Image 1 (cartoon, rainbow, N blue to C red):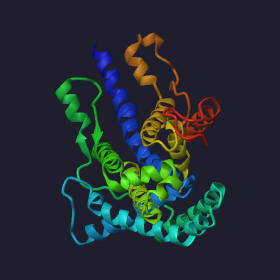
Image 2 (cartoon, rainbow, N blue to C red):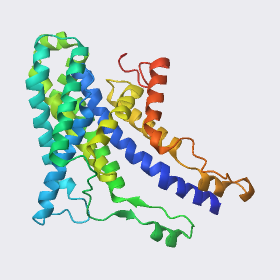
Image 3 (cartoon, helix red, strand yellow):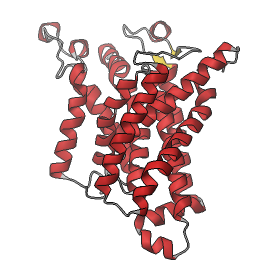
Image 4 (cartoon, rainbow, N blue to C red):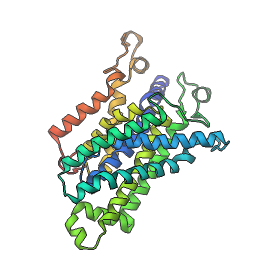
Length: 337
């Protein structure tokens, strides 16, 4: 029993807790992608770099607050700066909507035209982020590092393995859950949320019923920018901030949205956790975990790792291809792409 508990704690440290935190970050990113797809009807390839821009604004305000002595005590100062980061991302999103996407909406351009335009926007945002904050790794977490320390858990439990829960992981899970609840409340209980859903279901019927399309577009970008900033900031707190990493995150985020069923918010959340746990479980080295569960003579000599962490994004790609081939509507039957 002792060894089984050690194995469970080990798995929690390296698979369950990181998978939950990473899944929450992907779910927030996928929610933004699926919202844009459902309401504005195109795949926004600039969403990963919008996450980077929102996180960058949060970092700059965090540094300014730290410079004048403002902090959140045991919590990261970035949580205080997050509303300013959201504001920056909203302004940028609306600026690109007015200068780029609105023109194509008036022309009633095909969705592929919006996708190509979003690729151009992606490169522009990526250039802005690299120009302002640079291409290198940036760490901006402060406050208490751990909610549960491994040594304290070892002393309390008497196990060989200590359970560790970093503050950034706990904050990521709590904030992501709160944001998801707030989003579902907005979409189902508010007048604008119902208007957005009606506009998504049938644009022509929604216009005939008096729904203002400009307001729907405005609030769609506001919510997508807020989700992107929250996801980008939480990812940066949990790992670190690097502009190129957010570009790479586009693949698992799109995979999450499509696996869950693009256009379906619930599917985006489920898809985020499916992709996250797939990446983490496939790239984890199970040697110590198996060593607790089998006799010593049966323990593997190698790392017992299915795939190197260098190829973790390949997992998202494989899952994405399989879903498109077998079930193109995704788990929750979103729209066929």
